[in-house]
Length: 296
Ligand code: AMP
Ligand code: FE
Ligand code: FE
Ligand code: ZN
Image (cartoon, rainbow, N blue to C red; front, side, top):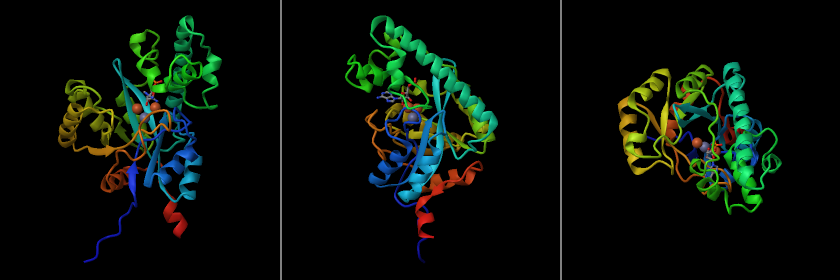
């Protein structure tokens, strides 16, 4: 009996950022980098924005990759920031569009406030941050970090996060975000497939309580991003228990931010079987099959 041809060639990385949010490469170049890294399938998941989808799609055709258009939606549970990876939803869905616009506005106000606070102690202005941000990009602490680096106050983006931008330094401020439950509901209503991003970055006890996770599962949560460098060994253990209990898919990805973070493309990957289920579940948007398009 002959084996069925694999649906997806090469490895699968379902979490990357471009300059449409806080990555350092344009959406087109993230796909090009993925091609150079030998990946076969890539999801582009900018924070609270789908602005990168058109040019990333163009690049997927040019470089013959499969692209899964996505987003990393900011949500918040009590005082904890919870990131929700969202795939193949309808980017014109009015409710989701309105919510992401609200979040991006809140991020902008919050970034200005953080910069104002830092400005008391350092010679840093809002213009310095604007200089580090692509027009229309979702603004975050990484852009403030880049401005601090450009001004010589800190050597790297990562150092800024360990120092001036850490909440302990006293300049930090959170921004508005909907609850994870609201996030899952919005993504599902837009035909998308939601996966909790890096949900195990601390001890077992820091993983989302079971009853809260159960609510998300009931609302249509598809999976947990367990293979991610920020998840701890104990966190992953707990997540595997929860995935088994709730029948959740397990994904792995890099959370690539270009030169902004040490994470390398393809350092963690997702299985073709999980990707196939994810695509079957989606009804809002289709993957871009760059390789297939070319060979037709
Ligand atoms: P914010 O969402 O504005 O609070 O900023 C946090 C975001 O910064 C997270 O999504 C991180 O992925 C991102 N980030 C980008 N580069 C880095 C870095 N070098 N160290 C830590 N976080 C980073
Ligand atoms: Fe980020
Ligand atoms: Fe994240
Ligand atoms: Zn991310």
